Picture (cartoon, rainbow, N blue to C red):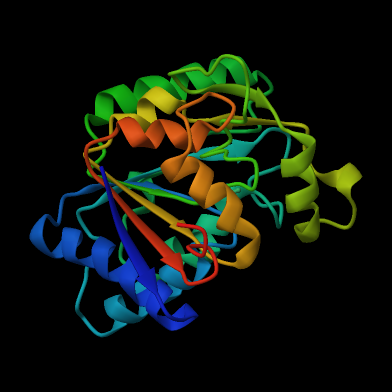
Length: 242
Ligand code: PGA
C-alpha cells in the first residue's frame, strides 16, 4: 500500500521527510530507525538537525540501523557510509553513538560481518521506520536487480550502473568499491513503516516501474508493493510518470 506525497520543491521534500521521522520520535522516543545514505536524504537529515536545535525532536533514546556499507573503505574514508552518517546527522544530534549501527566494511571477512549485522538486526526487533532512497536500476539499499534476491544481510557485487552513479563522489570510477554489505530485502520488508524518497526527472521512470510495474526481482523496489505501509515522497519531476 503506497501513500504517495507529491511535493513542489526541495524544501517541501526535505521538510516532509524530516517531519515524518520527527513525529515518530516525538510519539515514540525509543523508536528504531532504519537509515539510508546517498544524495536523497542529505537535506532530510539537515532539516532534522534544525528540528533538534529548535528543541522539537530528540534522538537520545533512539536506535539506528543503516542499510549498507561499502566493503574495503576505512570508516574514516571520506566516502564510507559510517562517515557519511556521522557527518550528515549523528555528530549534530543527541543520539548515543553506541546506538548507531552501520555494517562494517573493513573486517576483512565481509560474509562474517554481514552475518553479524544480521544478528544485530534480529536482536533489535522490528524497525519502526525504514528510510529508503531509490537507485536508477530500482535497487533499495544495495539490493541490485537479479534473478534471485536475498532476504538477510549479505555481501553484494555492485552493479556497473550503481558504481557509475556513485563515481561522482570519488576521483574516478576505479576508486568506487566493487562490493558492499547490504540489509536484505527481507529485513527491509519487515519494517513497520517504510519511507521511500526520490527526487529529480532522472528517477521518474524507475519510480513508476517500482510503484506501478510488475513485482519482479529485476526491480527490487517493486517488492515494496507487497508492504502494507509505505509512504512515498516524490517531487513533481520524480513523480511525473505516476
Ligand atoms: P541517491 O541514491 O539518493 O544518491 O540518488 C539512491 C540509491 O542509490 O539508493
